[in-house]
Image (cartoon, rainbow, N blue to C red):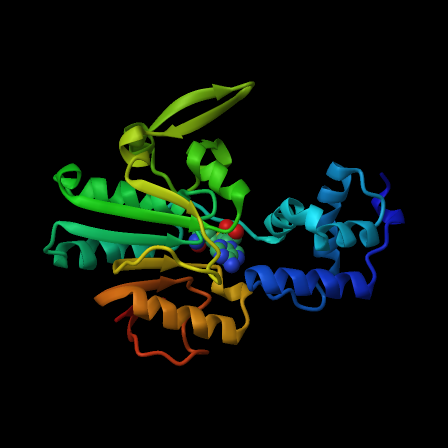
Length: 271
Ligand SMILES: C[S@@+](CC[C@H](N)C(=O)[O-])C[C@H]1O[C@@H](n2cnc3c(N)ncnc32)[C@H](O)[C@@H]1O
């Protein structure tokens, strides 16, 4: 299939932007046409569909419901890494955990991508709390992307997805395994079992009641417009324990929205 011969016109772009916005809150700005086309072409090729008209008509139809999820999946940006934005993990380790004087601890990695974020949190807890297995600790990890949740669930990564993990932590918490010609690293069961993975659209219904002690919602609000960010930050406030912490991405901050959180340090807020 020659992708150059397949045209994504303004109308197609607008229809796709609307669908993506309605379903995920992701606001695709003008200028993203080439990116959208490249990402959608993967789906057209997979389904052997020869035009964007046919593809968009299909995802808008009843029969295309599953494909609509796949379309959202290819539209999401999933970049992540272990211990990304290290200052957050330092703060968790040096300030939050030493202050935490209770047995029941609830953390939420909201938009966990392929799992490196919740696994980093779990590894840090294991490193810091010798009695971790006797405490009631749960890390909820959610994302809208089924593909990412499958990767997170497998907990098995190729070498270049292991960035951020020291040699010592690699030996302690991963086993080396072969996948065809590739060497991959599989997260140990004691870390894996600390995470509950679930599919969740941040814009949709949240079945869990909380309250959470810590929420990581990093590098996803940047894709949302201001009203969507506002609603989300209000919901995070409501589901956090008084004194609980909200971490956002370093390039995000909460300056664009109204909120009652106390600013603690870059991209860390407290209820
Ligand atoms: C760039 S990754 C961030 C991963 C991780 N939090 C980090 O900072 O490394 C953004 C993730 O947000 C997810 N996402 C986008 N829109 C979402 C929505 N409406 N609900 C839940 N997750 C969403 C994407 O699927 C993607 O995995």
